[in-house]
Each structure stands twice: as structure tokens, then as C-alpha cells.
Length: 111
Length: 111
Image (cartoon, rainbow over all chains, first blue to last red; front, side, top):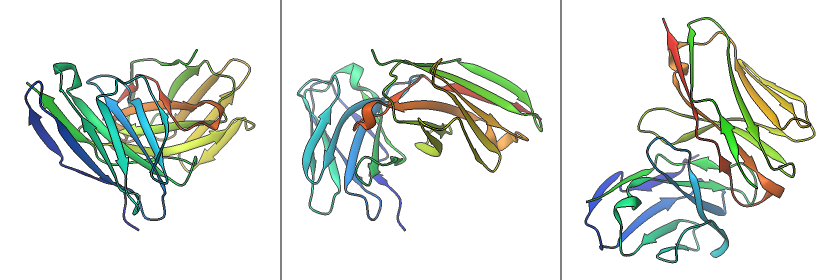
């Protein structure tokens, strides 16, 4: 059984640029959730995708958007990057609303 | 409101028991979770408890839930140096799509 994978592991972007982060869900899971974890804090919920539809959204602006593909993998897109977007971005997969299993994260640095 | 609170730091000696505490606010939370995060890594699901349970034991881990006081604890028996990490408590209001995390408790295990 393959766990949750994320790519890239690290990246550095400049303020104002756009970024796409990728997540492959665990085998058998149909739901992907994205979280932002700032340094020294707990993860904050961004949004969730279930069967290719957005299934809920946290308190993040519209420049944070996502997609889920037929194979249940997912992308997180962030436009017009700001310095405060620097964080660890975590993807979690689950079977519906059951327990969520996290990937290793993508560390984004915005300069 | 949705809020999860944890103490920031706990230091124990190897072989002792560790108890990490958490309080949550949403009485509708059906499941409560404990995750472990090692430096530079994603979150590892340790255990979870259903809200109609008072206790759950899983090898060295014991979870206690006091629903009246909205208090959750994680006891780690025979704590080892490999248990040094940040531990996050999380609630899932109304079995919803999102997890609400605390800020994490850093556990340091001294040899």
C-alpha cells in the first residue's frame, strides 16, 4: 500500500508569483484535504476535495485554489504569492470522512 | 467557536510516562485525534477516539476523554527518546470535513 506523497519537497518563489503543489492520495482513498502549517503552529485547514468536487473550505482567500483528478490526486494552486504564504503545505487523504493520513509536506518559501 | 488548546512543552525522563493534555471547545466533535510530527516531517496519525468512549488503549498509548470538561489526554507509557516530537490534538466538529488542530506540545525525552 502506497502512502500519501507530495511534490516538490521544497521550493522557493518570489512575491507575486504563482505556485502549484501536488499530492497523490493513499491507495483506496477518495478524499484529499490541504492544510497550511506556519512555523511553530498547528496546521490550518485550506479546503477538501471529494470525488473531484470541493467539499468545504477554510478561511483562505480565493487566490488559494485546488483541483482533484479522476485518480483522486490533487493540486493546490496559490496565485499572487505573499511573504506570509511561506509555510509547510500538507496534504491528507482519507476514505470519505474517515481518519486523515498526511503526506510529508511541501516547504514553500516566498522571498 | 472552534478552538483547541495544548500546553507548549513537556520534558520527561526516558522510561517514565508522559501525559499530554488538550482542551477543545466544540461539543459536537465526534472524533478526536492525536498526531505526531517529527522535525521536518508530516503528521503521523497515532490514535483517535470516538466521542462516546471514555478511554482507548493502543499498546503504549492511552487516550482519556472527559466529554463534560471537553478534555482529552494522551498517555505514553515507558517513554523512549524516539518519542521526542511535537504532538497535536485535533477535533473534527460534526464529523465534518476539516480537522481543527491545537498548536502542538513539544515532548522532549531526556536519557
